Each structure stands twice: as C-alpha cells, then as structure tokens.
Image 1: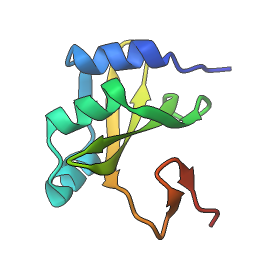
Image 2: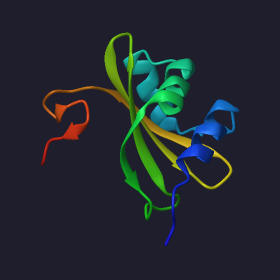
Image 3: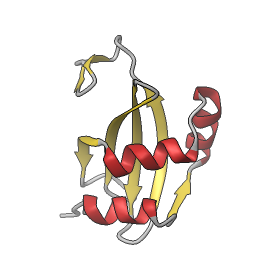
Image 4: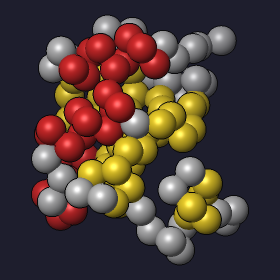
Length: 104
C-alpha cells in the first residue's frame, strides 16, 4: 500500500521541489493566492485529509489561515517532488467548520 510521508512532502515544498498543476495555477490566479501562501499552508497547516491510495501519487489536503481566512491546498507527492493540485478558500456550504467537510 502506498503511504504519504507528510514531513518529506513539507520539506519538498519548502525546498521548492514542487510543480504547480495547471488547475492550481488557474485557481491561484482566480482566488488571489500566492506561491508564498501555498508554501505557508503546506509548511504550517493542519492535515485535513490523506489519500494514500490516490493515483498517480498519494495526496493530502492541508489547511491554515492566510489573511485570517482558512485556505486549503491539495498536494500529491511522488516521494521526492510535490505537486500542487488545487487551492481553495473556506466555503461554509462545503464545510461544517474549517476542519470538517460536509457530507455530500
């Protein structure tokens, strides 16, 4: 079974060993999220969800406050490099609180 080394993922992001997926770049522009915001969330944020069996790489969802609002960053990790998949701000229609996703 695949596993996700959160410490190694955080280190890769902080060392700029990551790629922004096109979807993430678009969303960052739309949502006014900077590379520094993304790095802050991954480095200091809570791990909200982990998906160790995700393909092509295990992934995790991080959350930390940026400009006083919860910001989420979804990342994949291949064991050496991170992949920023998407970013989004807290939406009370989708979350009960910043740590709990609503059931669909």
